[in-house]
Length: 194
Image (cartoon, rainbow, N blue to C red):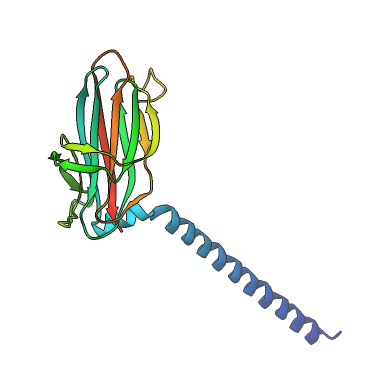
């Protein structure tokens, strides 16, 4: 093998290694960018950025043995996705969830807040309580454990993640105080227009 052939062979190997390194580097960068995109932009975060995500909540005092009904209603003409329903409680609760409850009379409508404070967009989906509600199909039963967070197993029950509610539909939470004393509870819906 001549010196020229040897140098040409080394040049080819060097170009091949440079090309291979460049491809590997581009794949590593693309992979990292994809991971960052997927990690940073969940569906909820994208809807917050669009100004189409909302939160609504309310606090109650629930007497021993008493129940409270809360209904989430979608009258928007569009699908609404509930990202989370959070129930925080000072005492134990039985929680039942129904779909398609009959609303005989409306109660107090909760205030909804857009999670993008720079957006004025609103949607006709809301929570209410204090009306007359009946029927529906029971879909879920669970328990919320109460107490201070540092002394109890829980105090937050997260229920209903990923529920899609078509326009004209509703879901109802029925929360029953199973303790022997009055307790404070709070309910929060995080939702967005699809």
